[in-house]
Length: 302
Length: 173
Image (cartoon, rainbow over all chains, first blue to last red):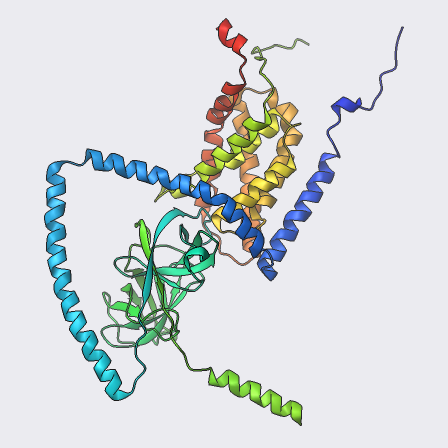
């Protein structure tokens, strides 16, 4: 009794639609996501929802940091702690002196500004935030912190550590936000050389250890070791935050510009807490834009 | 022709969906742990490895949909382009489902030789997507996570089988 064997698989072995069809379907879907995210930025709401779902996970990971630091604390010896204590006391004495001077200078500065009828510097509010993790994406330099739009963080705000500027808030979710480090390839900071007062623009290179001061003439007065601080011209960063130290200067007569490499001043890679500065500066309206608009209007009227 | 059976396949309990999802969750958790310094270049994409494991061992219970959702979470967690991991995982799942019968015949050591090229290919997809969207080539260390991912494959493979051993087989041992 022979039975012909069916070439088709019996229904209980079926695996849904063909593999290739599913591959095509899902890659099309991914392509759609990619295009709409990179070109139109329609998907911020999806990002927001997923980020809220991710938040407990991010919190869980920061527990690992707490555990490791508590282990460290338990292992630390009495002598170590005492040494650290004396160091901190010395540092405290030094900084309190500087703060007193700063207060006197600030009051003097505000009086002078009043006399000269210059715009006063608006006070800076700061929010402390904890770094949750470094983003895995190797193409950008990003960190994720545990404060978001719920705590009043806005995109574009400056982020500093105890030494100086480390980055700018890029994308804000409800409970967390992404920060672009100043060494990111797309990050640009307007700076000023402390020694000479020269203004320039500092570009990130995508590598964490150096940045480039571009478009400066080959005969520029700059030395290695010069400190660069934010110039405050763009209205994004408050004035005078340390940004970078000049490392090497290559002057090549074949090029119009000098190649100036700088190292970030703040610890772009080693910190656990950061401050997010909210700073509002009333900038005068952009006269060039206003002019071109009014011109267009008058042309239309004709 | 004589077919030699080199190892006796242990009969495992079918994986529960709960196990699959919780293992993916743990993998995602490990992926977003705060890593520092050189470990940042080495860290394997555990979500990809766990996905590979389930696609090979339980091809009927997991597929493109689960991979796609996991990829969405990865993209948001890393602040990368939305869809970049989705593209990579879709390729990865396709290859794993295609090779699942074949790979189950191999010993874990030989499976690694299949896993490495699959991981490299999915990483290559990410690279192409980013290069097209205007990024610079980040250097050859970009492919290091594939090597470490393949290296931890045996560990992941063994540890995900432990919860599926039936009580009876434990008793026999």
